[in-house]
Image (cartoon, rainbow, N blue to C red; front, side, top):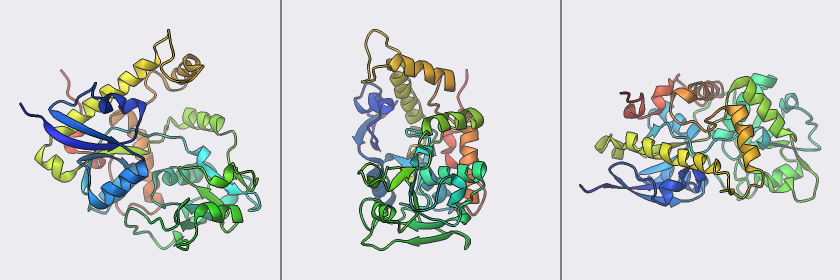
Length: 330
């Protein structure tokens, strides 16, 4: 029987390597895996629907669903997760010393709807009492001028946002002091250029993030895997087939970390790192599926509502293809 040919755009991850090299094959699918940077994937998939399946910003996906015009359906595969306390930066002359000092400040971010920003604003509100409405938001390119929001924003009037000039960048504005702070998935160039003008808000971010996880059990999800809705409607079975294949590939990557006679990764203390991960997270520190991640997804949906990105409440199940909800059991 001839297999269905699908093109997948996704990052170059250890947890998807077996899909990329073909050692894991989704049932009934011939997969053309194109590895590329996430920003390019999101732009090409969001604007032109170039791929059948792709990695996608979780918050962009949820925003489109909330607006009722999403061209995609999701499956509960999360190729990118990232604690984001390390992703908050400030100008040393801004008067910022602690999270509470962000009230009233000018804060840059490449896109208001980017998932990293949603999580950061979420823990700012929950843990420090600083809401999205308490800051002034400046949107634009971090390294390159002219970046625009990928999704259409329909924000309430109490969210104060404006776009920066087309000839400016957030990196430059942060270093010069035109903005006080930056939240972004990528580090600003001014952090390590020797100027000393930009610092991380949480320099001990690993300790802060471990405490955050132990307290909340949240390992923030950044990206999801989506299928073009027209592909899914013609072939609804692909959602489950892809879920199983992504899960298999991830499990193989974790198993490789447990090889003890030689390091599979260029990490001198891999065994120690693995033992630390198990102590903090348990056996599966990168879970796929809905139920192991329900509390994480519910937190994201709450944050997006509080930050004006969702006009109507969504349930976790609304994010995913119907055939990806629930599990087959013998």
